[in-house]
Amino acid sequence: MSHHATATTSHDTIAVAVDGVTRTYRSRSGDVHALRGVTHVFARGSFTAVMGPSGSGKSTLLQIAAGLDRPTRGRVSIGGTALDGLDETALTKFRRTAMAFVFQSYNLLDALTVADNVAAPARLAGLPVRRAAVLDALAQVGLRDLAGRRPPELSGGQQQRVAIARALHSRPDVLFADEPTGALDRRTGREVLELLRALADDGQTVVMVTHDPLAASYAHHTLFLADGQIVGRMDRADAAHIAAAMSELES
Ligand SMILES: Nc1ncnc2c1ncn2[C@@H]1O[C@H](COP(=O)(O)OP(=O)(O)OP(=O)(O)O)[C@@H](O)[C@H]1O
Image (cartoon, rainbow, N blue to C red):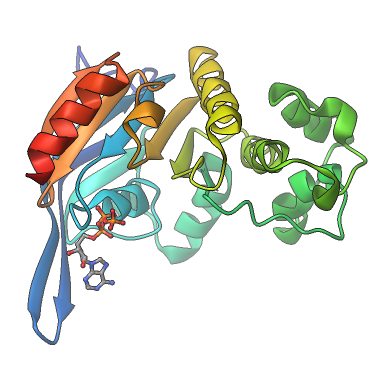
């Protein structure tokens, strides 16, 4: 038991804790305050959408919460591990197992089978790969039967599900998704969002950046960022309410 734990915040229930995080970019034209004191706990098994106007700090928050970028001030911990206590080597190693990313572009390798795409990051890292674990990850996204196909033989939605299986293969504490349905049509996008929601309902923590209120409506919670700060939050909101909150922020 860590001395950081309190009665209300147990490490068993917290996937990511972002505490007083500031991120300032130094540029020639002056400092840019991308994040200005963000504090938030992402609970284990929660599906959170992060929304906000362009430049509000969404990508920066995702990068920092995932340990890809370090805060100027404040702390981040993932699964109870404080990232500021890790040097670069330890952080790289920790990232490999604790978190995974899904992007708008699937970044699959066309020459490899679906199964080999799922296994690729682990193989690159020199980790042992079990066929059963690869097939489990594919089963989680409903594609176990397509393990032997190659990406060009799949639909866009299926390719994104392979990318999600690849992310799940390391059994990450958190799955980060940046506009995961940006390249998909409405119906296919909906299937991917339903999958992310089902994964979260099953205990997988998911954090998704999106511009789309309909996409955000699949999440349990929606956070609204403006000017580097969290300015609002909605729980189990529908697309119309999320869209109304967004247009208020953008006006
Ligand atoms: N590497 C960088 N150097 C300088 N400024 C940066 C850098 N990265 C981001 N910024 C600035 O930080 C602020 C927040 O950027 P961020 O990309 O996090 O916003 P965002 O909400 O993700 O935007 P979008 O919706 O357009 O992707 C912006 O003002 C941006 O110009």
